[in-house]
Every structure is written in structure tokens, then in C-alpha cells.
Image (cartoon, rainbow, N blue to C red; front, top):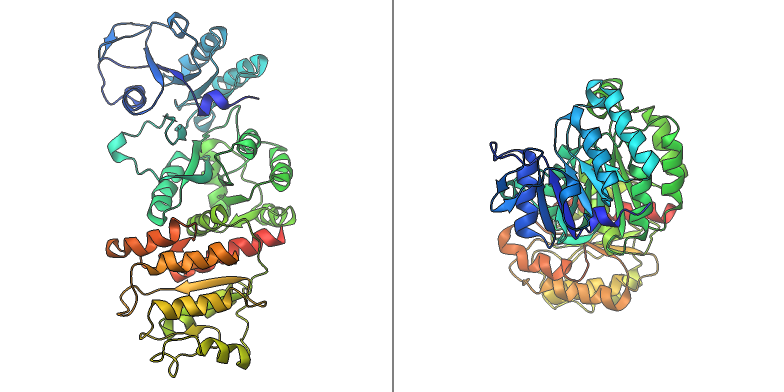
Length: 455
């Protein structure tokens, strides 16, 4: 099934545009795409008229050129008829943002949509969804542009049954500097769901990591999803809702999905080599790490810090997540000490974690990182940077990134996300070194690579 016209449309019909309600979802979607994206947009409403100087077509069949994507925002009882018109007019695909279907018990309305699409092999996303956001191409979310937080373009495709969870994750991705290739809210997924989107994203050149927020599946759908995700040639990260009995009831009332038994689902994910995020914070860290690094690690972490307390915290968190922090031999420590600046040599602790102390300068972090990048027992380096240490500069992120570019041993970093430290953070992120604003987040980044290595 070809979904390209849904994600990269050149022409779009927005069906349901209102002349009386400027906040109508169709109006928001029309304005956003007409003003900000390279797509020709046509307003549609059976009553006709003129909207912002553009003729309102009374049906999609009246539009004088082929339509790639139809966004349908009309009352639920009218959606099937509109969808059938789109099929007859040769539209490439649709997004149905309207609610009022299986999630409120109106299964017959949803079944009519599915049957029409199935007969014509016509792809649509929804209903009861936000639809599709493709950076630089299109945005069918009915959220006003001034209220949207959009991550920078990147390599993570984010697929969610819940539009609210999707938008919230986009806020978190933007805060952590994680870039998106696609964001898709699938809602009730009457026709296009996770399985079809896995197929598309696996071939999508924009996408390097596929992340999914999953509430539940139809009967026998979960088995097919797991098998397909397990065979996918890109990392797949899953965050599952409906873990408790009460949560499963909430899932059913939200998108009319079958949540199933969480413990079974979780064990099957592990069996098929699919990475599970336990919460939304792990989801962000996992996606950032996996979008930066193709390598897979066994989980032997070398920690470099300018604060002994931060190093101790990192060791505890690594241990709680089954990551090891191997000790360093006396010979290795002596060799590393000889490369440090004279003021730091007598006071640094060079076991693992390596505490360079608050007197460290850029050259000390560079020397320690260069040494660990060649240590055979360390397969990932975790750098805990406190930018307020007096001896380090904003150039340090870029300098440490150069070590990764030379030796290709993965590096993850912790830097407090404060505006004044932005240049240091950018020095890492512009060179594909993931940075977290918490120590636990940095550990999660290493966990993702370890789990990928177990797949």
C-alpha cells in the first residue's frame, strides 16, 4: 500500500471548512498548510462560498486537479459518504480527524469507513486522530500553529494511538533536542495502523528509528505487529499503555482497542528483539541514542565526571539497569594520569568513574575521553559535564565529539539544559552525540544501545 501521498502531498483538500467558526479544526488545518507548507490547499464545504479569497468547492470532485490528500473534518455520520466521494474522485489518501466512532460505541459508522477503503484499497488514517506531521511537507494536526511545539527535523518517526500523548512527546523531544522525521496520530486506526506504518517507515529514507505509543490491538493484530517489528531493519521502540486492569479499561474507552495482558506482551517484545520503553522519559532517551548511533554495545560503561557525587550517582543508576562499570587497571590509570594537566594529576581519581575534580580543564576531559575510547573493556563512554566548572569552556562538546568521530566508540553526555550552556550542548548534538539533561537520561541512552545489542 502506497502511503507516500499521505506523508508528502503536493495537493490537499480540507473538507469541512467553516465560514462561521474560525476555530473549526478544518479551518486550522487549512490555514496552517496554506500558509506554511509547500502544498496547494483547496477548501471544501457542500455550501460553497469563499474562504480567505479562495473558492470553497462543494465537493472534492469539483477540484480542478488531482488531489493527493483529503483531510476530513465533518460530523461522524457524514464521514463515510465523504470518504466514498474521495475514492470516486481518485484522491490518493485521507486523514479523518473527526471523532464519534468506535470509541463511543458507534462501530457501524467506523465499519462503513473500513469497508469502503478495503474494497478500493484506499489508505486513510483515523478516525478520531490528529493525523500526520511531516516536517517541511505537511501538518494535519488541528492544533493552532502558535500552540504547537515542533522538534527539529531528525531521524525518529513517532507513531501514537493518542494524539495527546503524541503532542506531549513532541514537547519532550524538542526539549531534549531529538529530531523527528514523521509524527503520526492513528486514533482508532480503522484501516491504517501500526503494521502498515512499520512497512512504510522501514523504507522511508528520512527515518532511522521507529517509536510507537501503543494502547492495544484488534484480535490477532498484536502477533502480526510483533513479528513485523522484530524483522524490521531499523530499531523499533515501543511504549505500551494499559498495563494495569484499570489502564486496560481506559484504553478501551479511548480508542476501542484491546489492551491485552501487559506481562505477556512485554515478554514477547523482548523475545522478538523489540526495545520497550517503560515510560515516556525512557522513550525520549532511547530514541535520541538510537538515532545517533548505529553501533550496539554490551553495556560496559566508562564514566568521566568533574564531580565525584555525580559519578557515584551514575554508577548506582547504571547498576540498577544492569549496566557494568568495569574497573581500570593500575597501569591504565598511570598512563592516563600522565596525560592530565599538572594541577589535576595529583588529585584526580582514575578508577571508574573517573573523577577529574572541579579543577579540570578542557584538556583533562579530552585526555580521559581519548584514553577510554581505546580501552578494550569499555564499549560506551558517559561524560557528566557541569558547565559551571571554572576551567572548562563552551568548546568542550565539539572537542569531545571529535574523539567519537575518530574512534567511533559511542559517547553519551549529561549537561544541564540551561540556555547559557547551549553552545556546549550544540557542540555535542551537531556531531551526533546525544545529550541528556539528567544523569538517568544519559544512562537510558546507554541502555538503549545495550538492548539493541541484545536484539
